[in-house]
Length: 550
Image 1: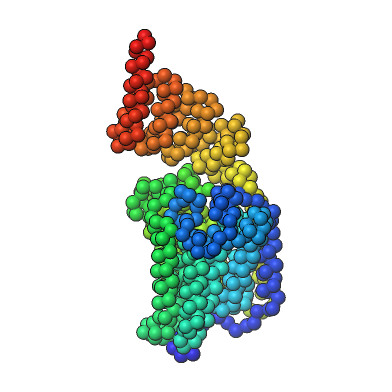
Image 2 (image 1 turned 120 degrees about the vertical axis):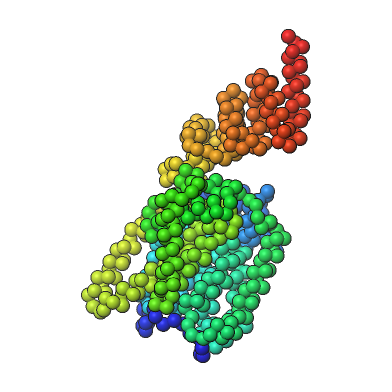
């Protein structure tokens, strides 16, 4: 090897015991075991259980032309994930256990690949610590126990494999064509599984900047340039495939950032940074929904924004300081930053501000950084009793997160169980109560659905669709007189809410408020919706008929 090699600061000689790998595999499967008895829950239902595309196994190229969600769909593009769902449906005739078993195997693969990566860049103790922490981390439950989390698991395995291939290639004077092609294939795998997979080239750059030392910039470009060139080619291919299936922008936006400018989104996301940090380092309170009431739109600088800025600035400073002294820790922090970028809502607004499943890939970087810290401490303990005591303490510290993970997995047993837990976990979110109400209405529990809708209505609900749905539920179960004020609240949230306006119009006709119905239709016409012209004329006709009857 000439010119470049691994940074040696965090690497110490030593051989890992052979039993560690099998023990990590057993630990991973034991952690995943409770999820095997889960059914389909939450997003699993529309994406897998009720999705005809998944129920018929077609050629893989068919899925390349379709979006992730069933029609009308949105901007999400994950054809590899959907195709794999179809394969699993075919294998098990729709049995949920097949999907959960694949999740368990992908989870185990992620843990073992992380351990393998750790052995390349950390002492054995640090590698084992990072892998064990990753295996028991409670924030992974959503990705592991919910079938659609398979996208997260697949992407993480692909990115870890990509980094391993890259670092092995950088041990040599020149990056081989075979490895560069393999890396391009891995990027295609990751990018077709989920959007976060497109971050692989940036994670490789982070590895180059921290874990590879020696050689001028020109030498580095000459040696690794072909690999990055093929990454660009693979990325462009992914872009072409995506544009042929779904648009790049549009789709649902989270309440906290809906319609916000880039500075507004940045402020809101700064306020979410402390929540990310808590979930990485103290993830004992978990919830399936971080919606309105839990994460709110920032109107200016506040304590959360200041805390978020301090966390980001501290992490950036740590990377600069540790890049030469503790390169693995610096690499871990850069991994976190890069993996979080697609869900930061800075490039484009998304449907979530915080979601635990999106933290699966970033948590790899957290595990590596903490593994580097554990390796540093382990080296300073010397031999004998201090190390034995530290090892025992580390095992004890892992018991609590392991237990939290095992108990949390059962929350994802089915949609009803999950949503009932969510209103307990996130009581301030009207969306949590709304989702439970919607589910109860679907299964015919009218009394409890009514109570849950009213609980949601007592919280600030800014989504006109909630009022449309709540109003229609009341209209069907109670009558229009009770539904009218609910539809009015929907229009107060958005005067362009066509469904709420039309339903309000018909309810006003039903209760005999013809003049008000005409005014509602006229306002729709003034907003440019020609469909309300006929409704306005109908209200006029009914008013005239009423006058004649008198």
